[in-house]
Amino acid sequence: TVTNTTRDTQVFDLIAKEQHRQESGIELIASENFVSPAVMEAAGSVLTNKYAEGLPGKRYYGGCEVVDQVEQIAIDRAKELFGATWVNVQPHSGANANTAVFLACLQPGDTILGFNLSHGGHLTHGSPVNISGKYFRPTFYGVEQETGVINYDIVEETAKRERPKVLICGASAYSRDWDYARLRAIADEVGALLLADVSHPAGLIAKGLLNDPLAHAHIVTTTTHKTLRGTRGGIIMMRNDFENPYGIKTPKGETRLMSSLLDSGVFPGTQGGPLEHIIAAKAVAFGEALSEDFYDYAIQVKANAQAMATAFVNLGYKIISGGTDNHLMLIDLRSKGLTGKLAENTLIKADITINKNMVPFDDKSPMVTSGMRVGTAAMTTRGLKESDMEQIVVYIDKVLMNHDNESVLSTVKEEINEWMKAFPLYKS
Ligand code: PLP
Image 1 (cartoon, rainbow, N blue to C red):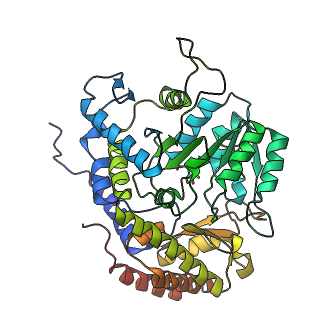
Image 2 (image 1 turned 60 degrees about the vertical axis):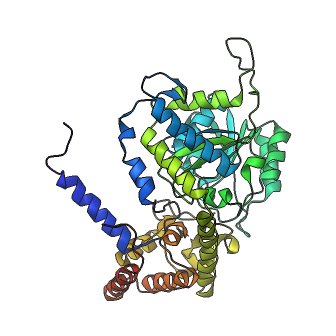
Image 3 (image 1 turned 90 degrees about the vertical axis):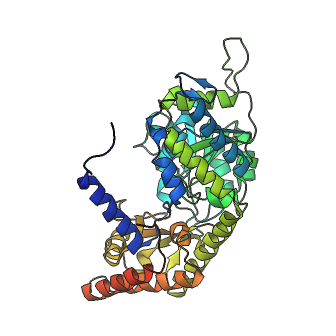
């Protein structure tokens, strides 16, 4: 029998400790959120026991009748949520989704053009330490120093100069919406495929609160755990499938569809068996995201981000690009004489979790940085509203302005722990 006789207290005590940490503090990491108990239940289900290499109806293992249905529900719900006609829900993470796309679309040494990591881009869009930067030739566009905003004329100039095979948009720390139509025009001009990685704002996009990437990008990837509020994972989507532009044929001599190359890019290209328990959790999360309640949630995430940005500006903080269209903002702490590292390390003492972040044209190293990134997706899930965002900013300012005063830090921590009791997260 597999019934537990003794509990592994070493691990489960730590899980309880982590739950307490999450419940008693203020979570502002822009890439994090709190999943529902239903999502967590699916993620911890018996589906973890099942091998299911292949796709629904076309598996390399027996006994897949049930997981086939689960995976098909995840696919169908993702299609409905984003207006896609093709989805692969198997990538274990956002990084895996992007790597599978690159494997499907590129040969080693091909050029890619992405958003500069030090301006808010992601490691998987061409960083030299990631496979995307090691196996391909990465080139970059960034934001303008004066405005903190992407200048699409410069993206176009760069694309014409570098001639990428794949033009990538999407970011980890960019608070403005993207002009996908313009990017597609640029991609078409240079014969590139446009990949939109919408990992951060996916939940807002799903509810129509930001521009629609699927209307323009050939391929869209996203993580499922940020504003989308699902389990950790990734998916790849297309609104319209198309014949691959590389002339790759099927054994019957027909040109393979892009969807077929992307499916192969995931499995067997970069992954083995899919995590059907996680796919079940994705299905549950997509079901939640399809609801009217999630629309209210997404509206509140944006409203909270606006309120937070205004509160920071009112206290003299500099937000890159001057504000936010989505759930996050990047704050340049140089005007306050602080580094990102100091901010992160001090705020955690008051149970406020943020991450240090490079700002565009940063003069500090990635381990120090001049900025901090904050987002509202997680605290909105807990039920906090605009006035609470103002209170959070007051606390942040108090902590940062008193970073060497331990008694102020511990008083703020106590107040926050008490405050958070009013916003219960999970039943213990
Ligand atoms: N793409 C973007 C834009 C991201 O922000 C992230 C994660 O922060 C990823 C990809 C990678 O996702 P994961 O951590 O699930 O691999």
